[in-house]
Amino acid sequence: MPHAPLTDTTFPRESHHDEKAPDPSFSTVADTPTQRRELRRILRRRRRALTSRQQRQAAKALCRRLRGLPELRRAKRVALYLPNDSEIDPRPLIAWLERRGAEVYLPVLAPLTHNRLWFVRYHAGTPMVTNRFGIREPDTQHGAHRARRLPAWALQLVLMPLVGFDDQGQRLGMGGGFYDRSFAFTRQRGPRPRLIGLAHDCQRVPTLPVASWDVPLDAIVSDARVVRP
Image (tube, rainbow, N blue to C red):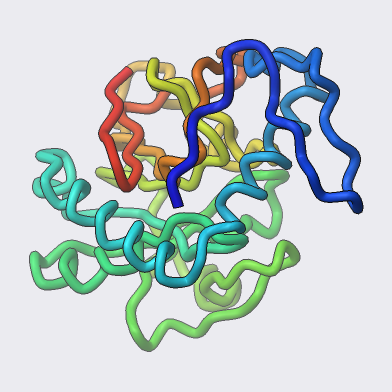
């Protein structure tokens, strides 16, 4: 389902009578918490409006683009996510990565650290649970064994879900700060993974601000394009 990007000055009006239409004075710059929340709501509605067939097509197109990235072709320790709330689906990559001998890791809400993530090795036999956000993840007791997880710095590439992005490579995250806290160390010198954000192309907007806590990404990939900051 094609969507035009949001205009430079206002959010689009919602016609659904059961939800309040956004204030037309809101800018896509979304430089206040209220504006960011409103933009997240609108962009989530966009991706939820995609049909199952469109979701499958988008996932295939996304994974074709990802398989062409040199950083993914080189990586042997890759973290990705299981889609939730109509996020674009990277799961078709898993078999391809495993055939190449790469290890696949999934994020897990760290039980003792506020708003941070563990990265636990994933395969067909991994015991799974549903976390408090309704997202499937490896069971915490399973992941508690250090042999089954990696510190974030030891990953080589991380694919993370986005709510929105722009053509300059800025992004709008989920709002919980889990990835930003977990990868804040990438601002310093030392080993670090490549960070790539994923989204449906209908989640693209003309411009987004840079928040002080946003960890920069190396690339953003949608079903229609690759954006390099």
